[in-house]
Length: 82
Image (tube, rainbow, N blue to C red; front, side, top):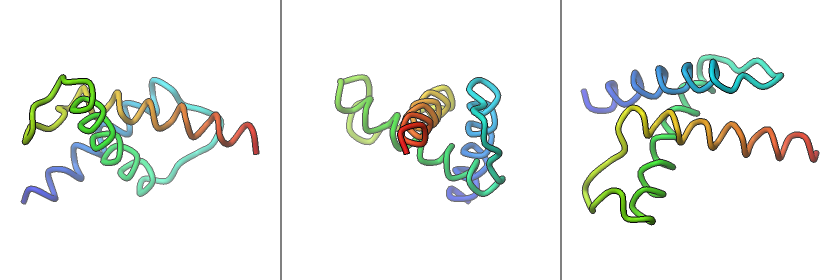
């Protein structure tokens, strides 16, 4: 059940991130879910690195959105250079 909940939150975080920072390409639902889940991991590890989260804590929904936005921004920078 935990993995299913992570996927659902990842989908929602990815969709919201795409609405905030849409870019020029269309992403499939699968990539949107991956973006949201990866954004959650990015937010968790960056938060632990700067001391926002303690060991064992994870980023919440807002953190997942911020992490997904960071990934979208980096992806668009890399794609523009290519």
